[in-house]
Amino acid sequence: MSTLKILVVDDEPGIRSGVTRILKNFRVDYPFMDEAFDFEVLEAATGEAGIEIIENNIPDILLLDNKLPGIQGVEVLEYIKKKKKNIIVVMITSYASLELAVKATSDGAYDFIPKPFTPQELKSSIENITKRVFLKKMTNKLQDTGKQIRFTFLSMLSHELKAPLNAIEGYLKMVRERQLGSRIEDYDTIIDRSLDRIKGMRNLILDLLDLTRVESGKAKRNITDVDLVQLARTAMDTMRPYAIQRDVTLTLHGVSPLIVQADSEEIEIIFNNLISNAIKYNKEGGHVTCDLQRTDDCIRIKVEDSGIGLSPAEIEKIFDDFVRIKNEKTKNISGSGLGLPIIKKLVDNYSGRIEVTSIPDAGSTFTVTLPI
Image (cartoon, rainbow, N blue to C red; front, side, top):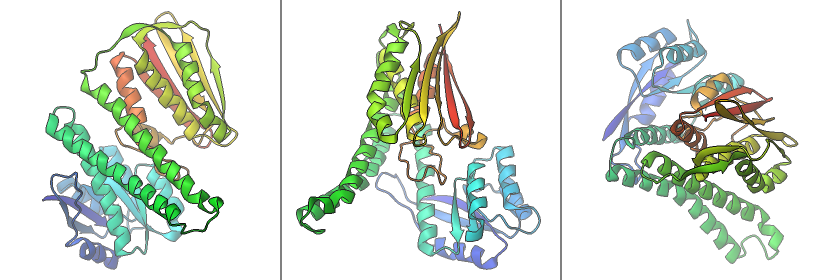
């Protein structure tokens, strides 16, 4: 049994004691985990007291109210960010402060829980956070461990695939039993839901295959002369049906041939992820522009979109494994959180770099620089 420390910083005694009572005998256990997790709850009534506990007995998870006597919750959040403390922060706030909670999430908080919350809402949030902690630990261990860790990791992913499969099976049984009626249009909604789940599973599997190939270091790389413009054009043609569905215009700037020594499959992965993300996080009627340029010593791949954009705090996190930006604009967008980390690892293999500039609600530009 592993124990995660949870610090509750809230000036309401009822909230603090309620969290302690709800989590006192609570356990989180999944089939892919080696052991279950239980929780030790620490309490603080002020931000100052919370910081003192963080300095002396650092918690794994922080449940943080914003409206506090003395320093406010957002100031505690800023302190954690400045000190680079490895703590998952969840804001607990009233419905009247949801806008503030969303802002705090963009500034580094992992999530927020509106209060008053039910025991089940709190437990559900803690379950998700615990899974994230476990996934992060497993990702780190994959750097230098053997087959057993990989087996556990794959078991976890199979668990992630099980939920959508169960949902699809349930929908098919509804169709077979004609639960919604005899007309085919009666089932349009559940057909769409099934297709969405199939798409999510496919993307997760493809991202996993890419990540395994990049991190294993064992796959033979086929370095040849490749035309970047042609590979970019192929990626855009592949993504065009998705772009049409989202009403997003794709434009390619670059003169072929633009030759570089590289593995064509690795470059395809870079283009596919950059372009698909630019479409996925775009706005209806938006655009995506891919611009390829060569200088004396490098080649620059620039993918610009007119999408929802990123805050500076979000940019700091997007290249971490399994990180997905959570806010009101992304809550209905699915993804594995592996696409950008895969790009970063591939670019590093070429001694290149990837940079991001973004303006919230105006769009983002991802620039990959590869040395010649």
